Length: 215
Figure 1 (cartoon, rainbow, N blue to C red):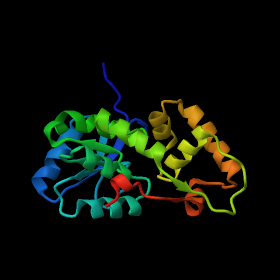
Figure 2: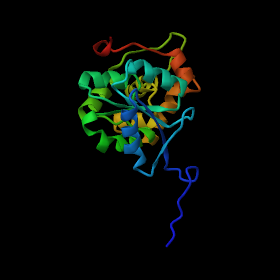
Figure 3: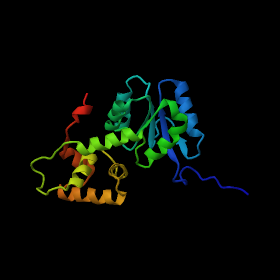
Figure 4: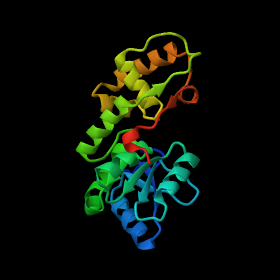
């Protein structure tokens, strides 16, 4: 029997990935781990990828992640590093969507990339729970000229996550609700605060940094 192999454009399940590493042997190792799975496509220089995999041993890796993800706003970041709980929380608050330990990257990196490409978060369960509580506790300043509609407690939690650029899937995962319910809350917030997009919302609402994670 001949099995037809679908092209990259025909297979909607294929995930484009770009690896960022200082040392060639580390980049090659990460790429080999991913290329061994058919579902991943390693992009060439200049091509936009769905997921960027960053080596935590790069010099000034924080600045590199920030610059790359700002340049390619649709790219989501996965960090391979040895992080303690506090460091992991800092990375999640910077917008990294996946944190994989060097100790288990051969096993976990493909899974993390898949999760992150689906709009989900991949990290240690304890870290995720702490991060979820941090987002719910974040204090949001709403300008005085916003319409005087009162947000519900749940909508306030969703607002906290919206201004930190979480997707509907991430919001649903953090709050243990369905994605459909998350979309419903987002729509209500947009209507109550008279905004038409997430960018418009973030332009008007300023998130105060959480003291415990500042620095």
